[in-house]
Image (cartoon, rainbow, N blue to C red; front, side, top):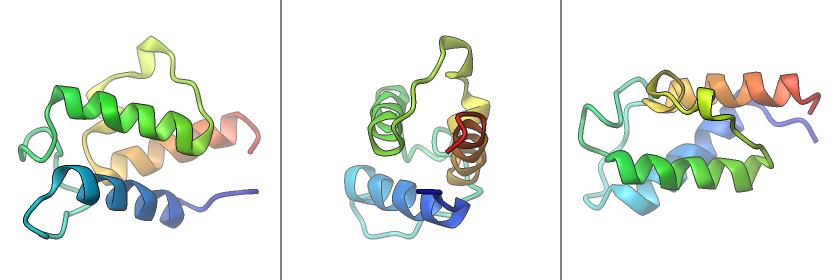
Amino acid sequence: MKITQEEVGQKVKQFIQENFVFNGQDIDPEKSLLGSGTIDSTGILEVISYLEQTFNLQFDDRELVSENFDSITKIQTFIMRKTAAAGE
């Protein structure tokens, strides 16, 4: 089943809001998750684990860089690239 970029964004945003945002505040998809303090480095590992399980992906060490995980939009783009490369 092919997943859309919008679905990826919704799932990621929901996971982050449920696990890291405790004031009910909405998350700007363009805003840096690390820079804004929404997530710390340990939190990024939790997000990566969630992404691997949810989207049935494996990440190479060279992919584990902030350019791929620093905002919801960056995560969406990265996941769509990964699933396209995997032929999903």
